[in-house]
Length: 230
Image (cartoon, rainbow, N blue to C red; front, side, top):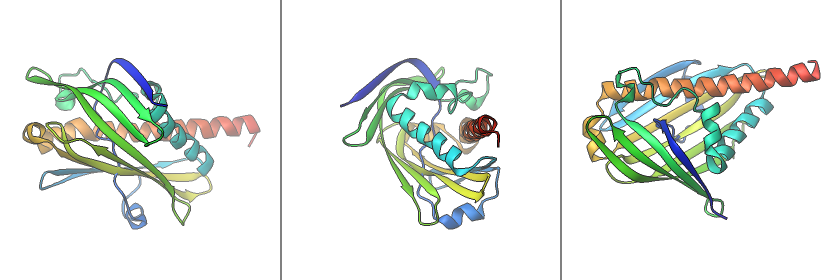
């Protein structure tokens, strides 16, 4: 059964779609770090945060992130996407705005389709762009969790977008969330989005997204402990 949701112009910028990472990468990036690299048209943003919670709390939050993205994505704006939409501060953080119109999910194929308008304020609007994505969720041999997302679209907005969200346990009550995002823009945005502009658009949103996940995980972990008296 195809699940469809329509939104009243939710504003966001979504570079968040995740790349396959080897386990060695997680160990090589410092906790609570953020950086972006650029090479031959490919933007790559890395971010990690330490989370003061256990593995069950982390898995619960990531389960909700995936299920809500596929089945009820509007709920994500209350927590995971909170604060990453339009900033209205006159800066380049709003140089490109994606207006999330509707989404559908087909559980038989595992494919989600986002319908968005890409707004370049004062310049142009690309309407009714369809972005298809697929999520792969896997537990690795060391007990870590890897969530890979691929996006499929060819045109003015995206030429290539892929990445991974990686969950690793550091201690009984300490987790590490790692994300690497890779984006190669289509013809128009490849010209319009400079390295400086991309950092303004993407970096604080990626960092805020990761902080939101950390805060929600720690909130649930603390709530569970207070309820059980641990």
